[in-house]
Length: 211
Image (cartoon, rainbow, N blue to C red):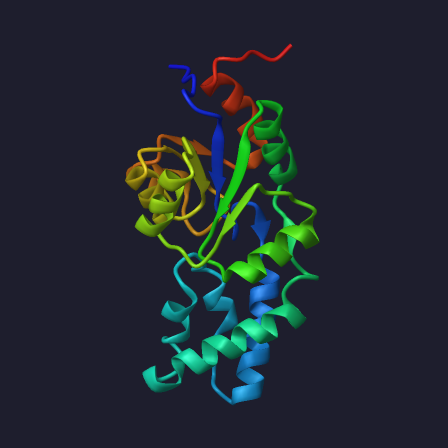
């Protein structure tokens, strides 16, 4: 059923593997961290499970008393290695433009370190009205609720949890580690193969036809 927002439309998007393919840059950053510290890190494995907070992944490779320091160094190395190889995923620009075409606001709610999220969007030429980083699952939902987002788009099961927590429409995109069936089973209201289908879906959701 079409939904007519009672407040200005705000649509939230996840960043990694929803708007941007950050895998090459993240892989390169972990490889640099591994070389610098002498710690083995399977960067190819890391990029298959993007989404949860950085420290969750860092703790797989570093002891607890070194994890915070390793995470801080990762964030420093990230700026040298991650932006150039990162590209927008198919339909990312069009999805953001579709929200604006409906007079809406774009909120990027991500688990990524917020300063790096801003730099990623700038490098990709994607403009967001709201950018909030360092959030995961239900804490994403709190930010979505705070900013009045009625839709949240993400690739991870944690994104679905965040949308449900905010009572927002959960739109899953099968561009990350989970397939369409897994996203549906996790509670996604809508599942798209990628963002290329988002503008048409948003039109239907808002009850607006395309001429």
